Image (cartoon, rainbow, N blue to C red; front, side, top):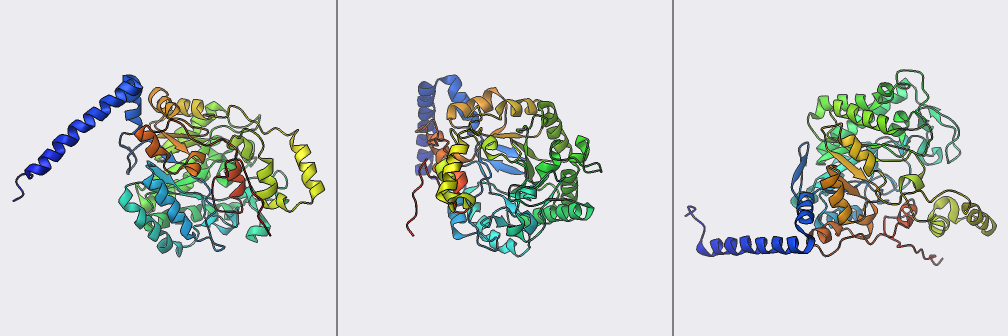
Length: 437
């Protein structure tokens, strides 16, 4: 009964086989043999630790703003992840989730600081499982980028230089604080596995707490948590080491800033050294980003999004008309047009890849299939990750794969990243509409 396939099934596979060959030949003719070969590599199956990916295009962690006041996800979060999975993403890294209340940055930030969240997120991971798209939970602590008015707690950082952007006097993390933070990350990793996430990513970029410890500019400590690079990375080493004792080979990735806006900040050589150390700490992959708090350096925009700031940002939208006018005038003299606008982390990521054996992911202004092909096939970087292109087009990977589109429709206005501070994530396409009272 089961010895051979029925004749009609054999015929189906025969036709499918030659249809696929004809389709491949068509692509070769349209793109050229070398270009097709590069495209094929982007869409081949691959692995990050125990993770299995269907292509090399990852949705990078993006704050979704889809959380209730208690930090639990809204129904919209699952809908978003389903659209991304159906749209062909090779893997989805979630927006950051806080490991402690003291590290919460926005009122609409999701939290993952209690075991009670396990069953809530299990409902999401179970729905994603049939798509075969790994769901990776990003874990973070905001450090000096938090507000005591939001958290009700002291703002903790690696070493305090001055008041933060919210006017808080930050507190240098003492030994008890650091041990609490390490324990919180470890518990979150353990609970992420229980909740069915396929892996986790530690957010050590963009001026958040782990990034503050790594930075030679922001970390001025004189104890075992500061000074030499080994000491500045100690907090990540402790998190990884203690987590591995419990979760074993469970995938743990790290996102870090390979360069920042400081003249005495991270250098290319030190970025390579950081990646090599993370590999020694059993990190499964590194994602290369940039910046240490200045959003205009981390996420490049064509111009300052003045309209979005004045109409969507909580700290600016309620200003009086004269103050808004002063902001508009003053912003004309501030530096916001960082260049290059696109692919600004690729060179450092390619250099890092030469010195590590673990997969390297690069994020930052990647907008076209031609660019992706070049990054993966010629530059030798393992994966690319996208943020804003997925906001405007959750199905952009499928469009790339089908050859119906070569570039993202994103115009790099940055309005989405301003609006998400107080609203669910969406694309504004350079326009905001004043809401009627």
